[in-house]
Image (cartoon, rainbow, N blue to C red; front, side):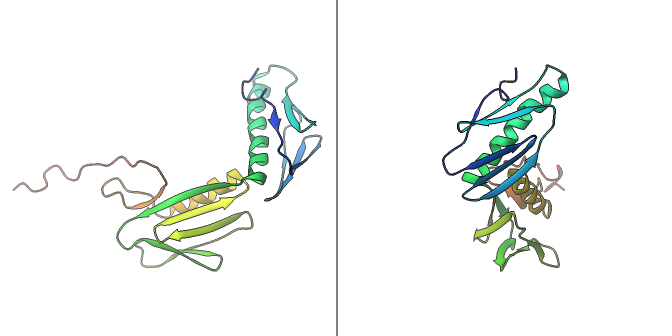
Length: 181
């Protein structure tokens, strides 16, 4: 048995779960998420607990078992607490600001980089060098954060660019012959 897949998911108070075959809908204080899962697995919701079981030990079903359980758990977690990613901007003149529903970034290009919020994502800029991305769908939050980071990834020589909070950038030394004549 999958160690992750066999763990039950306890549903907190205030969260409504509907299982219709292989379609799971989770409604909570922060919003609603719906996802369709594989027909091979059976998903049951009884007495505030969601369980995922697989019919046999085929490799494909084993792979889907833990994944399905984790995705449902992330749905429950998202509608109760939500998910967030924090990005840090480092570099002289690099900064971000929020204008309406747009994230406007100055990243050393000749133009400003503008990204808009989606209906699943909210952007917060508490400081000019910090961006916080919030949402109820873990995958959407991570994807949007990756797209923002992609606009100016951190470079290894000076460390300038956009990085995740707590991300360690491996630094490289400059030219070997620097300063010698």
